[in-house]
Image (cartoon, rainbow, N blue to C red):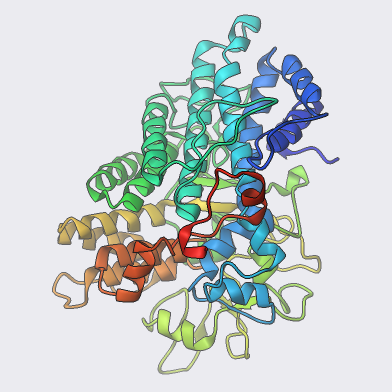
Length: 522
């Protein structure tokens, strides 16, 4: 089995054994761990001894979350396909998702609606919170301050996993301790209770999380596990990562007062990610976004601009054929594949990108020339969505379909647009306009003027649609937009009846009598 690695970090065999057995024990469809129980206990007994064990267990949580998001392309199938801009070339299962037929009988449907892999993250995080402090007494290299920062990361990752699940399923089981051997099945807790727990955990975590690891951060000065910030940036959750997730939880709850506070803190302090040998953060140009110019792409390698993201490092042998958007969107002439599995139709492209000066996509009215940073072969029947194309060692084309793009949750431009959304809802029009224009300033588009009669909320969500296309946001943006507007009777009914959530996997329902299907999908 190939080891799971990040930059400078290789998980040892004991940790891999623990992770594999954690995947089993965290499955809510099982009531008893059988022959694997002694293996896990032995692995744990040998794990919590020294600093290397702490590092391996901590990185394991991140690895499990990355796997949970990318397995069967979950992040994009759920975020970009349902009622989104993409259409399926020939796959009927993808068409069913696009059309909202989420209870259709396809293997991929049952697979991505199984929440087991997210509970693997939660269990691993809970286990770390409970056991890692034991290492402080056993290994003098592992200081209480180091442990506090690590536990804060575990809390933040557990909270992030719960938020991610609530967006998908609504009510989910809430576990706050690890489980081992026999354990009772758990019913679903209300989404409000789960999100309240996630927010409280994040508020505890951000008090301890540093801005930077392995540098001059006052909360965690000096090298972190022997490495500097250039090793850890873009890899670990920081204080600003925690505030970004808090902002999104607040927005999902419709609590835009808190969302405004959290996004303000983020933007006021984002310069704290600069220094100590990293590329730092900034609002990136269109070429940097789509072509990795100046090494600022949020999709290639690991970067500080990946505020919350999980990389696939080519140098660590993490190139894969699956678990990347490119698997679905790319084809000739970029890779040796006849046609993409999904694409954005030309009429949708023209509808979304309406500004003739937009560098992401536009058609010059005088020359007819196409600016197509987001698309390749626009004049063909099926334009390729090529905004994200990280092939092998961050190349933009290749003969082998092995990809290394990061799965990205948020970046600075996204948080700025979220702040614009919050400010607009709160009636702070001028501030909202400034945030909107700040996010869009690198894209060549005309600014939104304070004198404009165009609806500001509409303008903000239209910019999110353009800027974040292919990043897993479209469906969740549609939900938030309709919660704000409340002017679409059909969608109002969908929200009221729980239709915005996905059904729960048959495997979960069959094994746990306390888990009931989302009523909308009965």
